[in-house]
Image (cartoon, rainbow, N blue to C red; front, side, top):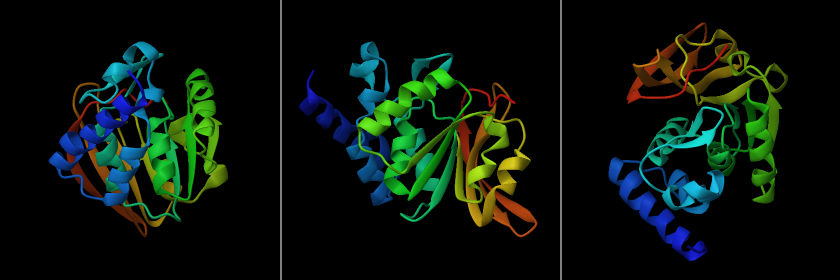
Length: 210
């Protein structure tokens, strides 16, 4: 399979998995047409990289199915000047999508081995607007705060207060909330001394460890 095959698979993925499921933001769709998802999975998984399901990436972690990555990305409503905090670098695929949509991405990963693998790949693809950190994602990354948006790629049983504190007023956080078996994806919008929640539906993520 060569790059032309992957390019066709990528375009088909956008058409049949994203547009078909009402992902409409053209900037999001353009990012998914561009980013080579197959490079972010293990070589033996590359033929399945554009299928409609998650894939293992090692260390008990996964790369989410394309639609979920798109849903989360679109829900952040990013502009090209926004600064984004990503909790969970993982394979780096979601990081690349965010880097296409925002001005700067700060990505935090608890498992150093995963970030060590993702960083050279992202840099090799030409992304210069990503900052990397290894640490406890529940605590966020205070050094870069506040952020216009925060995306959490693991499920938390409760809304992490440190992340909420690191959002600007009017900032958005997309996060899966729930236990091991029942989770829902929420958009949290910070309002003065409170916040609003919008439920985007059921999801299944690995747990956010704290």
